[in-house]
Image (cartoon, rainbow, N blue to C red; front, side):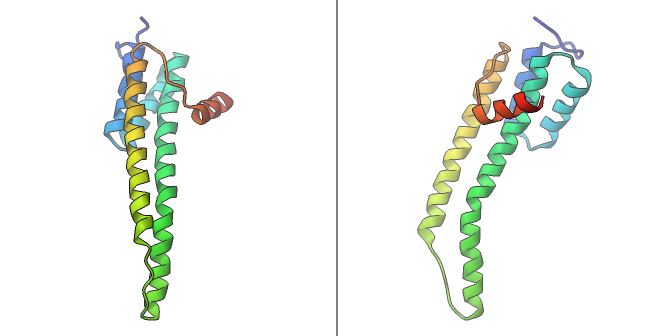
Length: 137
C-alpha cells in the first residue's frame, strides 16, 4: 500500500477528499486538492482529487441552473408587481424542488460511493467529469 508524505495511505487521503466534499463546502476540499497537486506524486490520487472538485462543481452548477427556472418566474412576478399584478406558477417551483432534492440525494450517494471505492484506490466512473480530467490532466 502506497503512503503519502503525510504518512497515511493514498486511498485513505482520496476518501478523505471525497468526504470533505460531502460534509463541508469548497474550502477544505480545495485546500486538500491543492496539497495533493503540489506535494504528492501519486497520479491516481491527483486525478481523484481533481475529480472530487470537478464533481462538486458540476453538482453546484446543475443545481444553480435548475433554480434559474423559479428565479425567472419570480423576475416576471416582480415586473407584474410594478403594474399591481401578479404572476405565479407554483407547480413549477414544487417540481424544481423535487428535482433538486433528487439531485442532492444522488450527490450524497455518489460521494459516499466514491469515498468507499477510493479506499481500495478505485473509482466510480463519472463520464463527463472523467473525460474532462483525461483531456486536461
